[in-house]
Length: 93
Image 1 (tube, one colour):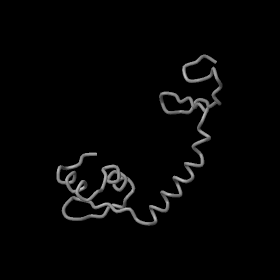
Image 2 (spheres, rainbow, N blue to C red):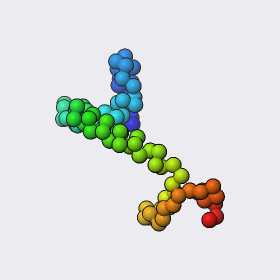
Image 3 (cartoon, rainbow, N blue to C red):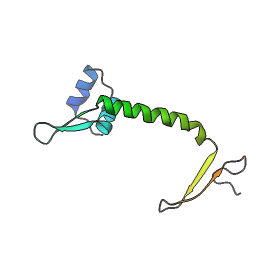
Image 4 (spheres, rainbow, N blue to C red):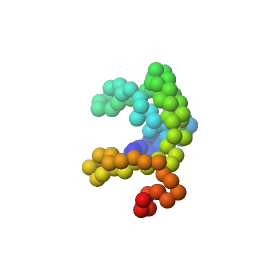
């Protein structure tokens, strides 16, 4: 993300980390303002939705362990399997 020098100074002065700026642009609702500029704001509804999504994701993370997904160069999933001691990526099965 490109950030102007002015924005760098203001975000530092206002204690808004660049990572928060990125999240607001990614998930906020755009509003037309002067000229071709857009202002982004994350609504309470969007925050609630993101929190729910993250909670579900956290609940599923442990299930990622020891799983392999093989994908072709065109993006098609070819197969999936549970990793064993000798079946990791690059190992012959």
